[in-house]
Image: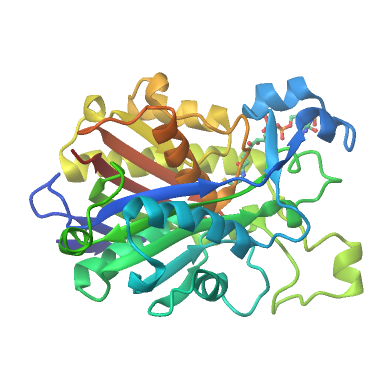
Length: 357
Ligand SMILES: CC(C)(COP(=O)(O)OP(=O)(O)OC[C@H]1O[C@@H](n2cnc3c(N)ncnc32)[C@H](O)[C@@H]1OP(=O)(O)O)[C@@H](O)C(=O)NCCC(=O)NCCS
C-alpha cells in the first residue's frame, strides 16, 4: 500500500510490518584523513573543547583535502558498498546522490559519480533534502524498485560541509564535518540473480515516510549563490555563501519532528517501542538524539551516538553511522533499526529496516 496524506509520503505494506520488497545488500562509508579537533576550533573562535563536547557530543570532525570534491568522497564510499554487495558498477541501473554541497551547481554530483565509477548503464540524479537527504534518496530508490523501474540502485549521501562553514561563526562552525556513505538497494529478485553476496550486510525495508515544512526554510539556509541572490562581491563580503542556522529553533524542531515521525512509524507497522533494537538517527547533536529516544520510549543506550569523531555530516551521517555500527559489531540478524532524519527544508524522514539472516 502506498499512501499520501498531507505533507507525508509513506510506504508501508498492507500487512503492517511485512517487508516492502526493497533490500539493502551492501553499504560502506568514507571519511577524509584530515581531522579538525575542538582545540583547533578554539584557536579560531571564542569557544572551548568543554563547551562543544557538553553542548553537542562532538570532539572532532573530518575535513576533505583541498583537491577532494563531494564526488570524490561519494565514489570512495560507493566502492566498498558495491564490493560488499558483489555488484559491479556496470550492473547498476540508477545512481542517486543526496547532497547539499555539490561539486558545482551543474552538473549533478551523481553524474560525476557515474563517470568516476564507470557505471555506464546507470541513470543518475541528485536529491536535495538537507540532512534528511540520504533517507529521501533511499525512499526514492525504494519507490523505483517497487515500481519495477529499477533493480540495482546505488544511493549515496556525500557532503563537504566544511566548504560552506563560516569559521568566524562559533554557533555553527563547531558542528560540521565532511564524509560520505553509500548503500546498494535491490529488489529481492535482483539480489538473488547476482552472484553470491560477499557480505552479511542485508537489510529489508519495512516502512518509509518523508515529511516537509517549507514555511520554516529560513531556519537553516545558505542565503546567496543561487538564483535569488547570485554570488557577488557584496554577498561574499556579507558571508552569505555560508550555512546559517538558528540553533535553538532547529534543535526544538529536530526533536519534535523526529519523535513524531517515529511514533507514526510505530503506529503504521504495529511495532512497539520495545521492539526497536536500534534508533539510528541523523548525527546532529547528542542531546537531540537522547531527547528523541526518551520521547519515543526507547532506552537511550539503544540510540546510536556516533558524532564524537565525525560531527554533523548532513546527508552522509546516517550511512556513515550504519557502516561504523557494523564494524563495531552492533548489528545482528533479526534486529529492527529505526532510522530518523531531520534537516534543512525543513525536512524529516523515518524508515524501519530489519537486519536479514
Ligand atoms: C548550535 C547548538 C549546539 C547551540 O547550543 P545551544 O545550547 O542551543 O546554545 P545557544 O545557542 O542557546 O547559546 C547559549 C550560549 O552559548 C554561546 N555559544 C554559542 N556557541 C558557542 C560556542 N561554540 N562556544 C561557546 N559559547 C557558545 C551563545 O553565545 C550563548 O551565549 P549567551 O547566553 O551569552 O548569549 C544547538 O542549538 C544545536 O545543536 N542545534 C541544532 C543544530 C543542528 O544540528 N543543525 C543542523 C541541521 S540538523
